[in-house]
Image 1 (tube, rainbow, N blue to C red):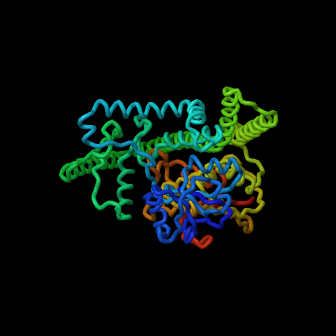
Image 2: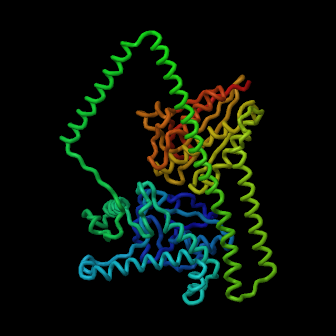
Image 3: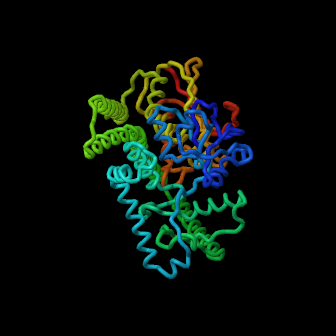
Length: 519
């Protein structure tokens, strides 16, 4: 990725034009970096490439405006020196490449199948040991291979970051990760890389991915192919069955007496009530899942800080190094502050599941929206989504927890839309505005997630309808939001697509408008 200080006035990739960028001979022609530049209207001719010093201090001393860096290296060093920075990562612009691949020739594999398999397994075993024993591995590097003279804690942090990336499978590409292990290569991602190489003019031929990826590294997939004739016959059979069912139901209705019709209607109402209760239960389960995801986002950073502090103490003690009272108190205070943050997070989320929270109370809408924002804040920050609000103080008497649940569904829906549609990180916004008029308050939620397909926009409040991947959507979130707003809060909710300008950027997304009575 490309790394810049946050005080250089470089807020987007386009701002790198005519700037000095430190790049090594290897990184000058890195396809992902070039693709990111091209996607923002730049080429190598538009930037001044200078030799890489591999010293992050050159960013601080203004010897360069930017430098090619690794997420696990220079950012850690800058944070240790309390230096603010900004990252331009190709993945944020849709260029999600593998950073390192173990390879050999097809001829070698053919002539040495057993040796190849053992070498492949031993390599993964080595990585697994390193990630399972980050403290020991860091100590080994620090003692024997520390050519850059980094402090020990830096290697510990680097190990934690690399571990996250190594085990972070892309669920957009893989339907079932249960059989995927460390080091997996996915065929679709490799094809995407090849396509970028074609655009850049590096290659001109297609790649047979099945031959390119080592056989023991393939994911288990099931491909189903049907001929046109088989599809046609299957369609005819399905239509015939549907016709018979339709005819049978209609014939039965024609023969029913008035009493039987009344009984039938009553039974149908009972069945509908049962279905609604089931949907409510499923929705609450889905809400719990979303909340647990938000808890995980908010806990990840403080837990990492606590882990790093404890690792520092452990390693320093094992190496029999001196540990000053000042440094020890600093670490203890840091751990205590992180624990206080975790405790505060528990209190915030516990109120959401309060069993006595079904009663109507007088609450402030602005406070409730800000509380919802705090629950989702870390998930939004981790995905570079900026929340812009324009709220007023406004009190209503109703069920606060139900209101927060309905809002949280809109937050999560906006976040998922921006991620699934690969919206660039510098164009991810979520706007919330509130207006009062007479005895009604209107709350508008606008995202920049690309909008909803006009063909299905009228169906999104239906139960079990979802535009998300089956592993990420239940189709109950927006349905429950509609039910809560309409049936419990006596309000209305509508949705439409909107194109608009913000900070000179042309954005498109979905806009949800909620209207609630103030009395």
